[in-house]
Every structure is written in C-alpha cells, then in structure tokens.
Length: 154
Image (cartoon, rainbow, N blue to C red; front, side, top):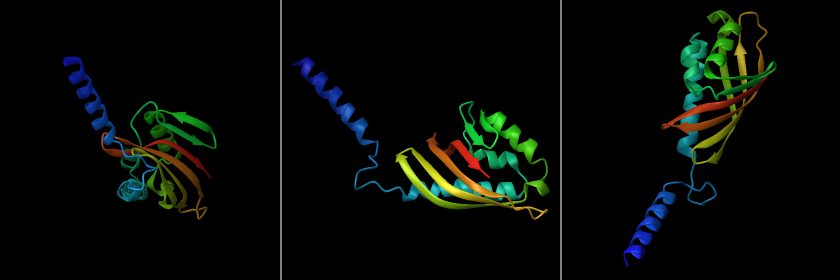
C-alpha cells in the first residue's frame, strides 16, 4: 500500500510539473504577451544604439560564452567578443547612426523560445544608410527574453 501511495504521489508531481509547460500546438496557447516582450527588447535596442550606447544595446543579448553572432565575416561566439566587434566596428555615435528594426515575424518555437525575422536600417551621416536582414533566436532566461543567436546579413 505504501508503495502505491508513493507511486501516486510521484505521478502527481510529474503531472503537475508537465502542466506548467505550455504546448505551443495547443489551441489555448497564445504568444501575444511574449511577442510584445520580445519586441520591447528590440525597441530598447533601437533607442540605445541610436544614442550611441552599445553597452545598453547589448543588454538584449544573452551574456554568455554560448552567444553566437553570424555575419559577413563568419561566426563570433561569446558575449564579450560580440561586444568587442560592435565597439571596433562602431567606435562613435556618429558612425553608429540611427537604427530602425522592421520586425517581419515573431514565431514561437516553444513557450520559452522564439525566432524573429526582420530587416534593419541604419541612417548614417555619410548617407550610405546600410540595410539588411536578420534572424534572431530568443530564449526566455531567468524571466527575460534574450537573443542567444543573431544572424545578420547586410
């Protein structure tokens, strides 16, 4: 009898734990609030970049050695390396210009992961105004949405 009660308790705990994870294929799953939170991260990045504040811009990224950034020169791994590349490529506010994101789509992968497709535009003093496309992978880490992978082409 004692074994049966323990088995029922273990099964109950497992079932309760499973209930906390939302199935994105469930008709009851809504991603609107999470998508809005992801967009808010990106809007804060636009403001920070346009103010010449790379450190605040980088707060949207996962501060981990596992962060990955892919671009024209290949992949860079690690938060510090990505930050260093941004600082080297954009040493002044004038060179950074004004950043705008056009978010094309935010798609959930799970209840704590999503990818974002979009286009970036920079308005800079020399009127070259670079633009390109990006794919971002976001994860919800410690309650905050962070970019864990960024692939940008220009």
